[in-house]
Length: 306
Ligand code: PMP
Image 1 (cartoon, protein in one colour):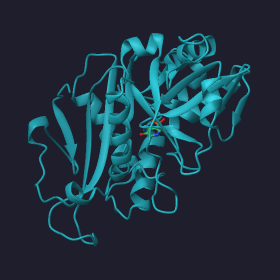
Image 2 (cartoon, protein in one colour; image 1 turned 180 degrees about the vertical axis):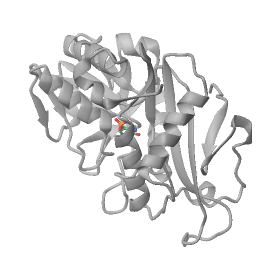
Image 3 (cartoon, protein in one colour; image 1 turned 60 degrees about the vertical axis):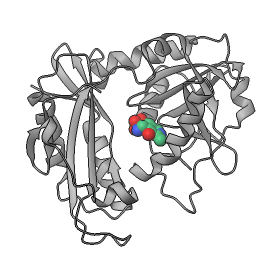
């Protein structure tokens, strides 16, 4: 990864190399910590963070679900991220922001009440999550052998560090088999989400994406639905089975890091023409216009860093 200059740690900026924790920090052992993934883009008017408040609010909500009491308000954490992007003096087009609240050192054993809550905001320059080539030509997606954990035994709506063990195993399997990314089904066999992104397909000009029954409540998915509806594209939210994907006209993944990444192959089947489809391309270019501040209608989603 590309190091930056400063990390905001419990209210203070510290040098990148000094943002350290004890090896007996609670979250390192048991995985109860919550993250966000937010992006800032270099617009003509300087850096702008996309949907900042929505991301910070989700961090607070994930923490509430997992019984972590973050001692900062949404507003304080928004300000910390604005200051962080400013102070790091980035130069590239793409900055990824990673807020993280976790349980620090002092308590062992599973009962975590009383463990100190550490809050950090970090940011670094990070380009296309699934590669520049993938953005143009599409990626290869594999349906993973593992499913998303059932809602009866997990909190998939918390963006919790622990949930990413499932994502990590699925991703490894997909890459090891020669694919770029993993798609996970839910415990009923319906499409849930990719290891770190949401799923969309195009069928006869209509967009189809699953409900959030067993997924993170994605911010980009909502943005893409809004963009599509504004363009007059019909959007259907319903359960999807794997064989429907194989015969779809187009497919793509969405997420803060994945942005809009076309899918060209799923489980050895070419999707549509086997390259980026026309509706995917249209949505992708509109999305980039929005995040780079070139679409006045969506300016309200941008927080400019002056
Ligand atoms: N699902 C999972 C499991 C993710 O990690 C992400 C990335 N945060 C998404 C979906 C997409 O969410 P968002 O659009 O809010 O980034």
